[in-house]
Image (cartoon, rainbow, N blue to C red; front, side, top):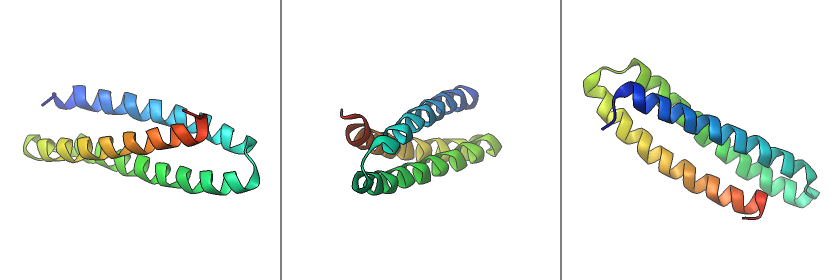
Length: 97
């Protein structure tokens, strides 16, 4: 398991990358037709909810002691995998691949 600071830095970098990608998707959404926009808005709301969930885990990890850190890291890694799956689905829908 990575050291706490290394893991936090890695998680922050990934969150920053997701945030930048989500901004690009929002721009694409504005160019879409009305019906597509509604579908995209729902998917974007789901992504934002997952991102917020990851942010809470990062905050917990920042406050955690060594014993709790391992459990939080495991939970974050699971949430990370789910976020990446959702981002991949959104990439296909918003960016065409």
